Each structure stands twice: as C-alpha cells, then as structure tokens.
Length: 436
Image (cartoon, rainbow, N blue to C red):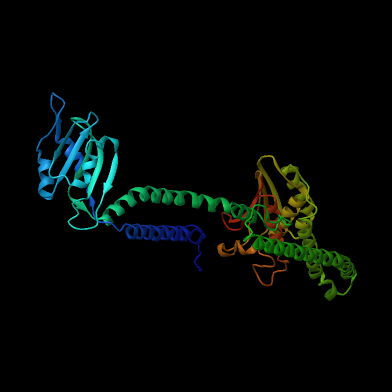
C-alpha cells in the first residue's frame, strides 16, 4: 500500500526549519559584524563596581572610607594595577590605587555620569575603565574603576544574546503557534469538500463539491472532480434510460410470446412457459430497479395489512405449486416507506422461498421488521452475502433471474433499513428486513 504523505511537512515543518536556519545564520552574521566593527581593546569587567560599592562605608562626619573586604581583596589580587575612585552626590569621594592622569578632569564630576566605558588600544590597557552608578551601604555612589579585563568578543556575544535571545524565543513560539493555525485556516476548505465527497453515493447523484473558500492551488482538482461527477451522472442516466427502455420494450413481445405458448397444443412448445415466465420476471425486475429512483412515495406503513395483502395475492401460486404459507404477527411498530416498493420486496422474498425453499413458508411481523422463513435446504454461510449480488445464483442451473435479492437489498438500503440472512432452527433460511 502506498504511504500517504501529509501537507504538514511541506507547509509547516520545512518552512519553520528554514526560518530557524535563516535566523541562526543572521545571528551569526550579526555577531561577526559586531566583532568586526569593534576594533578597540579589551573592556574593564563591569562586575567590579558592585564589589567596590559594598566595600565603601560612610563615617559619621559624612566622609567615605574603603574597607578591604575579601571580595575587594580578590579583585586587587587578580589585577595588580587595580584602581578606582567613588563619589557621592554630596561631593565626597574616596579612591584606591593610582588613578591615571587622563581621568583627573573627571574627579569631582563623576555624579554627572551614570554609565560609560573607556578603552585604549595599546597594552597594558591601563586606561580601560568603567563608570557605573551603584546603590551602596554608604548611599548612591558613582564609581570610576579599572580592574580585570574582558575581551570584546565575549562581551559582544553576551550582549547580543541578552538582546536577541528573547527575540529568537518569541519568533520560535510565534512560528510554532501561528504557522500551523494559518495553514489550518488555509486548508479548511479542503476539509469541507472532503466531508461533501463522503456524502456522495449512488442515491445522491447530482451533487457537486463546493469551490468556495478553496485555495487556488486546489481549485483545479475540485473542478476536475466535479467534471468527473457530472460525466458519471450523465453515464448513469444514459444507462438507466437504456435499461428502462429495453425492459419496457421487452414486455410486449414477452406478453405475446407467453400468450402463444399458453395457447399452443404442442407439449414441447408449452414446456417453454417457464422460460417465458422467467423472461417476464427479469423484465419486470429491471423496471423495478429503474422505478426505485423515480416513483418513490414514502408514507406511514401498516406492515400487518401489507403482509396479509401480499400473501393473499400469492396464495394461488403457492397452492398451485403444492406449498403452504403462514402469517404470524408478533407485534407491530410504526414505520415509514414506499408501500409499493416494500410489497415488491416481500413478493420477491416469498417467490424466492417458494422456488428455492421447502414446502412451507412463514411470514412473520416483528415490530418494524418482517421475516420470510422457509424449511428448505438453507443457504451456506459463505454465500449469504454474495446472494445479494446482481445475477448471482446459488445454483448455476437455477431458474431465477438473479436480480430478486439484489432488488430487495437496493430497496431496503434506500429506506435506510437492513436486510440479513440467518439459518433457521432445524434447517431452512430466514431473511429478515428491518425498516426504520
């Protein structure tokens, strides 16, 4: 069996994969450009300013003093040229280490700044410094300091990730949620025409698939399907008219032939009567099949009265063939259907039981169903479905037309009912017809 492929892969998964790949490539290019543009030296690590702020305390007279905390000791050990100056908004300041003369002009004006990075291009990079405003135990301090150095590549990568990571995550979530929703919305028309196609069968001809709200890429397929359905309807109608015309035209010559055979004095000619009767039955059944689509009139059915009427009409035929028939009414329930069609169903079942069954036929009404039972040899289990096929005969030399049970099934199907065959106790066959 050919494996079916889903549109989710080409419409959702692959575009998402390409989008993510493009985003990753764009991110890499952005980092490369940022690193290329950044042609300066290393940065002073900004993490030194919180450590410095925690090491500064204010005396009672308002002056600032530096405590050599363990954290501050680690910074000095990591950078022998470590230095800083801190000022508060009141103009008090405190410093540690040798402050380069390049920053002398900033002393006393540090509170005017909130953030800055200074870099120089030549080793030993002792001019690299950072300005940060920090909340400290001594109050708000503006700190200018120099300590351990960090390469710009790392800083740029970190900064880029801080900015781009949320954007990347937002894009991923948007793509995973919005893209499938857009695809489902775009293909909603396909789901609708699939449901319409499931409702098309031989009983609902003339229906077409809707072309509204269908993507333009799918519209040619829908139009092709509608054209195919139109051609099938036309072909079915031509076939139906042919069968109806042929069966109708056969009735007259068959009736003439039957009259001549019945009036013949030659025993050989009279022996053809059963064959002529078979031709007549076949023509009538073909007309019955044609009338299923054109002459249906549903009404409330009285199964008890209908069964008794059909049995009464067929009683002379049973008497002539030395058979007996019995009607048994267990209970009745209301049901709807075409009375003429149901009569043909019951007539075919009784005639089939007479021809292929035993000597006794039982017609039983049970609720909204009826059963025809005979005491004949029965139908093998493996043949109980096939006997409903057109022109199928249980025995090759049977005199039946092979359309009787097929006609029964088609009538019952059009009524939304069900026909089944089971074996009777002690032999024989029960054909059960259930109506709604």
